[in-house]
Amino acid sequence: MFALVDCNNFYVSCERVFNPKLKGKPVIVLSNNDGCIIARSEEAKLLGLKMAEPVFKKLSFLKKNGVRVFSSNYTLYGDMSQRVTETLSHFFPQVEIYSIDEAFLNLSDMNVDLEELSKNILTTVKQNTGIPVSIGIGPTKTLAKIANKAAKLTGGIFIIKNDRQRDTIIRNTPIEKVWGIGRQYSKLLIRNGVKTAFDFAELDNNWLKTKMKVIGVRIKKELLGEPCIPLELIIPAKKAIATTRAFGKKTSELKYIEEAVSTYAVRCAEKLRKQKTVANLLTIFIHTDPFNRNEPQINKSKTITLPVATNDSTELVKYALVCLNNLFETKYKYKKAGVIVDGLQSETSFQGNIFDKKDRKQQKLLLQTIDKMNAEFGRDKVKLAIQGSGKEWKLKQEKLSKRYTTNWEDIIEVKA
Image (cartoon, rainbow, N blue to C red; front, side, top):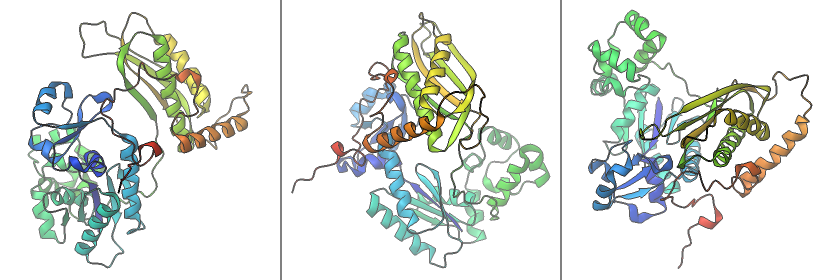
């Protein structure tokens, strides 16, 4: 048996942990640059607010209905996610972190009452972190996913205990809600009369192989209770890393775009070092606001092969700025830029360059020291001068809550 533990309305729940006045009130969390709605409390959903809805279109509605609005606080959300995972690891030796608010658990070797175990998990996670969760349990990961959706409607716990329960729940699961079936496959299946997960489970294997290859047969087996997707206990290294952001306000100043691109390149380098890889390829892109047709438009990118595969912040910044200067034109107002690194390899085994004279061993020690200082004292306490202050381009976060769990200055004071 597998369990999927899902944090309910996670971003909103994180805000409510440290601000109890928000309980029972409509609350939303916005995307980067305070653009669109990416999380809603149940009260906000009842008001008709939609995911991905641009917030500027709803300002008067939000004010009229007393909706509390927050900017994305990923530092807080990431730390709270880790606390939930640590709590789960006390119950189970095998935990797969599926996303920031979801984790799969392997219950196969546990000879316990699953109902009582689930209640204990719900209570302990809420007590340790303040985050409410839902638990779906089934004989496969796909069925655990479906059970979790049912759990949100049945008090937080749903267990698929037998074939009859399994058939009932997959009959009531729309095909587009099945894990692993994306938008295009959904359209294909609906055109062929497949509307539910139960319909899918009755399809012929040869038809599935023709239309969806091996993934279709695997999903069918999972829906019928045969495990085909094991727990991934080790998070795989990313095959490419990107840091892309919209600017807080549009700019035609090369200086400010250089600051942004340099910072994005440093972020990519930090991520590379964290997963112990180096990059062979570097891509830079910049573009204007595609939604403003009254201004001249441009969308340009440039990709280069690096002389030596690297995760060195100074090297990535150097080549990123070379690319940027080839792309930049003064007559445009730029809205967004990004840095992408690709062709990743292990930092312990990659092709060198006979003309490379850099003392990479010494540079590695320097970067390790910088990473350690920034981890202890806060991001960018030590940074490159070219990164600047960011005041002219950083994301708009006008409604950002405090970093209650990671910043000494933001710790809540309790007066007795």
